[in-house]
Amino acid sequence: MVQNCTELHRIAHTSENDSGGGNATMTRMTTMPPQRVRMEFLHWSTIALVIVAYVLNATHIFATAQGEQDDAIEETNSYILDKDLPKFGEPIQNLTVPVGREAVLTCVINNLQTYKVAWLRVDTQTILTIQTHVITKNHRMTIAHVEGRAWVLRIRDVKESDKGWYMCQVNTDPMRNQIGYLNVVVPPNILDYPTSTDMVVREGSNVTLKCAASGSPTPSIIWRREGNEPISAGATSLNSSTFSISRVNRLHMGAYLCIASNGIPPSVSKRVMLIVHCKYHPWFLCCFIYYNKDR
Image: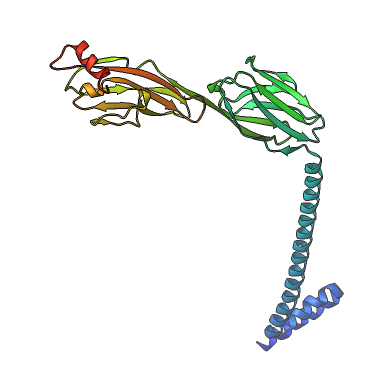
């Protein structure tokens, strides 16, 4: 055993002389005790890890700083670009227009530059105008460029079908737009059907008068006797489209008015005459009794 160690020491010493300074360190490491070798290895490993950690941290700090700088530049550029883009001067006013009148929708744009302006119908995805050119075939629409920054869309002879959302759009990237609502109101109109006409009924029977009306908003309907005469007992549903009388008698005979209104003038009415055949008298004598009841 001792002989083997001596031989190893001799070989190491000979290698050190032959290889110079570079191999001297390796020879020194091989002749160190194992515990010392481990300590040397741990020492240099720790130094290497510290250097790697420092390099990685410095790289991360540099990348973060570069990213923040890029974000700041992008935000600044975005602000500069946004500052130079067109802007809407005021909202589009919502309108309520009676049918048959003219609707005027105004879109105010500042700093338009060379961008283009278009009006669109939102619900039908229809392009109405581009700049001062009317695209739609609707001859009731016109477009005007007023005071350099207002784009005025006019709709003559407004119809109920014109009701809806309208959009003013500028062809920036991305597109800029704003919308306004056109509400078209329609005065009431009493329909011929199913509205009742003059009726002749027998005394003691039940009778129902009907009245139907169109309009926007939906009209409300009330019933009145002509001349503001009181409605006799037995009548029901005076504030609806139907007016019913149970066990009609000669006192119910006369003219009734169906009146439709929805807040849009004028209100309209229809006169319905109710004639009652009396049980025990000819109809003309019953009428004579009715018309002379107050004498």
